[in-house]
Amino acid sequence: MKIAIVTMDGETVSQHFGRSPYYKIYTFEEGDPVSAEMRRRGTGHFAPDAKGNEHAMNHHADARGHGYDEGARMRHTMMAAELRDCDVLIAGGMGRGAYESFRRAGLEVILTDLLDINDVVNAWMRGELNNLAAERTH
Figure 1 (cartoon, rainbow, N blue to C red):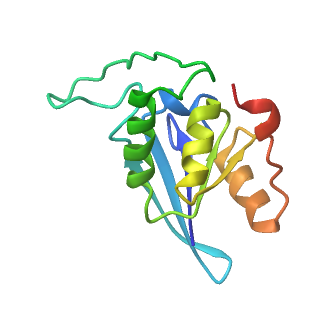
Figure 2 (cartoon, one colour):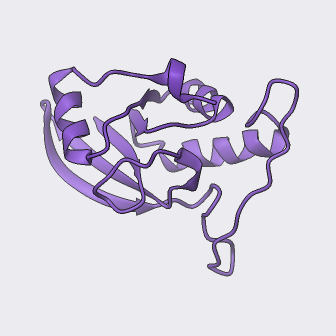
Figure 3 (cartoon, rainbow, N blue to C red):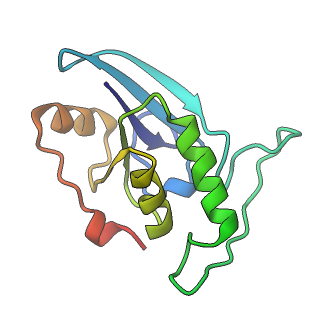
């Protein structure tokens, strides 16, 4: 079992999924963490382009809102592919289009108000990590 936590620094949960440059990935065996790695995101708002420069993505929402246009769906598909070895994705917040795309890709998506990654991992291990998706998607 692997969980991916969106982060800027490896210590805190990013409050905006799309603007985070990293995932901190924890591998669990028999309910206990056995390893952790930092993984640079290859897609998203501030992912590096082919020349290694970070760039902002343009969003063109459709009638359903932010994150549903064709370009966003393609980016979400690429982001989900980066996490194909993970089971759970944890962030502070994200757009509704991204949230729905990751769930369709088979990820359990948890949006939390906890900031410290260690607190998040411990709450998740105890089965006490509340999913605030209804109030934290936009």
